[in-house]
Length: 368
DNA sequence: AATCGACCCAACCGCAAAACT
DNA sequence: AAGTTTTGCGGTTGGGTCGAT
Image 1 (tube, rainbow, N blue to C red):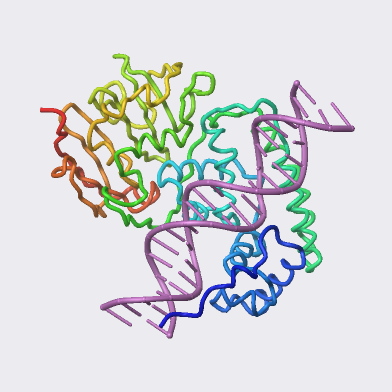
Image 2: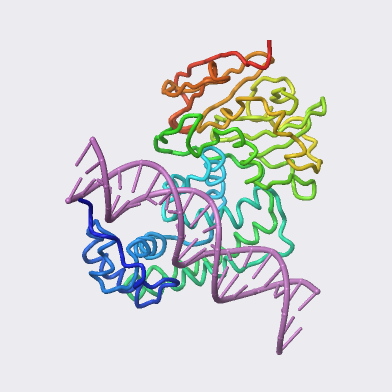
């Protein structure tokens, strides 16, 4: 015997919330809390809304101490570094940014940050987003002000100007900001619930390609800026096409690469040598799509592990791949069904740094 | 002034995991 | 233990706004 059925979907309102609905929901939750049951909540309040919708409205809009729009450069950096590290786990990313919701971050990433990261220039600067943000904040502040929070309006005025400044900065610096030290993130332990054969991580055969496609699809010389700190595409001296991603967090980094023709390439020497060395030898001006660059038939089988969550790949030679991780090595799966080793560290640099690291080597099946 | 396309974001949808009976 | 509901999450969509033509 289960619970009572969810809301009557035929009798619920959809679409934008009215100020009255907002007020009802906010007032009730502030007085009584959610009661641990979102589904029953709208009936108690007298709202013709689905409980799910109420929850979303509260979490993304009504709950106190939320900030909308006006993402700072530091927040940009955090979002980018986390996205590259853990993918689209917006709730985890949002947990690192107080006052931000996963939905906000997701929208921000999809509409602006991704393009910024890829250096896709907008034809003309648009201020609309910030305008809306400011409008939103003014609206929020008015509401707070009416609730007796006298600090809100001045805060909004300040944010408005900083928002405009931020927009101007964005316009002047459309590419990934250079010379920025990624923050050291006090991340919680991120569980690794997936093996290489399951789950939404970068683990399946096409995951790397998907990531690249997700991050822009075509790497056109018109758009791509080789100076991006954090995402590099390059030709090696042998003319092999290399995709290379790095996460630069504090003094640590994680890196990966893809190479056509069954060869793994990692910088000019094939050895991990730190972030600065990863920036070497960029040519960057090429136009083929990833499909053209790296035919799927030429993927090195097993390379999908390179993007397993949190794993750090440090060294690839002709016959071995060396990874390091902290003492919390937890997952081992097969490389060629028998020999691949997957590791993850339980957080990013701030935890990784200073910890005793295990060093593992194992055979790369494509080489003898 | 009208139209079009790009952009933005609130909200919905579907799925999986957790919680509950 | 099994079945059902609830919660939480990420992907997607639809409508409003704005600038360009």
